[in-house]
Amino acid sequence: LVNNAGIVRLASIEETSEDLWRQINAVGTDGTFFGCKHALRVMKGGGGSIINMCSTASIQGGPQIFAYAASKSAIRGMTKSVAVLSAQKGYGVRCNFIHPGNMRTPMLDSVQEVVRVNDPEAAVAMERIWVGKPLDVANMVLFLASDESAAVNGAAMVVDNTVSITEGFVPAF
Image (cartoon, rainbow, N blue to C red):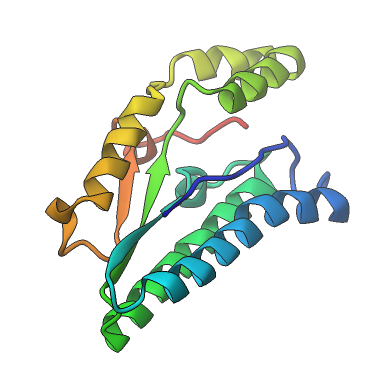
């Protein structure tokens, strides 16, 4: 199972309404919870792989992605908890997560458009950041779903070409 859902709306903690908070978490956090809960029930004892999509936003945060970063951070905790439970109970189900960086997707395009309009200086900075292809993440999903990753459980796989570990890099959004 691949839990790959999320929405982002640019808003700081000061600008995040309860409705926006609930909307973002209903898709990302709640969706992943239900996916893990029901996949584990079906897979336990027979093995399998649950792959949860996080984001480098959960590693770094960002001033304008408060709710999104919080949602993706919750998924990190869920993933590790499912992995440990499965290992302790001998279910044979692996649960890992991927932190994609900026990928050329409609979601990134919409964020970049909002940034271009509202903060041209940040937009220029965004243009210097590496942007990957969805295939980069798909290849990691294939690895985690395969028997080649049989000993990988509860792990974070970062797909961002070092962006999240580049010294001094702080997202403007």
